[in-house]
Image (tube, rainbow over all chains, first blue to last red; front, side, top):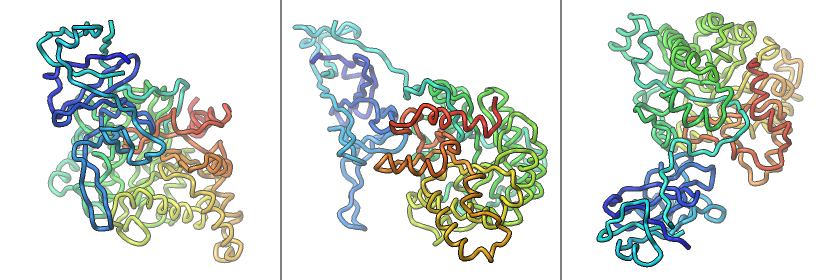
Length: 137
Length: 369
């Protein structure tokens, strides 16, 4: 598993997202209220770029007429056919048995950790005193 | 080095098919409402600004149901220069026509003069839309071909518009919608079929529209999802009417395309029609053949929304009844229920059938070399 620096934390404030390509794979990284999530940027249904979709909540219902709106800001909706995915796990709410989006762990690391040891970020000008968003792939 | 960062262009999200395809249902939009003004007489500018448009049904400020995505379109299809999805030729080329290798794209403009009560205004707007298709789309990209939009409730003016456009290579079909004031086989629409047959233009019947009637046979439903599945019911009524009123007996060279209505229901409708026809043919003695014969001979089908049964064998059996030579591939770009060309067909289709499905049937029907 290699670690890939995505951006300095300051460039991905809460509510923002960034799509990148790592080793030929399209990946998107989201900052949801300070938590970072990474998903493959391709809908398993027909291949749309998921990062173009909105983050919504999950409408669920225990009985007809009883509607709960949960997981606000944690459900990613495909820009084409509206398939819904849990941004934490990549699970599909349309067909969870057959379809899931690959989820990648995203962490925030101190620049001092990154430049020590084997993880050197070369394509971003690393100011070692900052924190960085890092994807494990 | 263990870090690689490359920004990925978002527009070409699809990997696309490499072979050339025809897309028989593309929806161009107007960037602004007054984009039509250069093609409308001054008299209609004043009319629109003073009186507006009076449609056959209410809720004119928007569609009768909220759509799944804004403008019922893909969320990634907003042009970078602004305006609604489908309003920019350059972005359509970059996002759809080029990456998907679309060799022939048939334009089906919606929200035109169809469904407007003032028939003079309806005719003026439809004719303006046809000029606009040439000016903004077909003259700028030879892959794109227009559909002649007509004031559908006024058969005489519609037929005149068809004859006016006949022979113009910018157009490949006449466009009607499935929801009209009456079922499509009724006599008021016959001048349209006569003109289409004379000029050799197929008629595309696109699902949806505004006829003033509830959108299902049992009234106005609660949810958009009911509209989505209910429109095939309307299309079935339209098709049954066309067959039973004897339209295909009267206009034997007429070709029709059922656009965006699915096709999985076609065999069962034909079977039911044939069965009842055996008992009740005395009521419709003008029919010389079984209803299914007219359907198989006169009807083509665009694929989007492509049926997606659990078993691919069921899909193949349905298509075999219809005929691999009668299906026209369509994406419905830029709308949200878009079908991705490389993903719609399951494995197991022969190369010859794929070639017919993706390109050749459309070129043949629309007379594109």
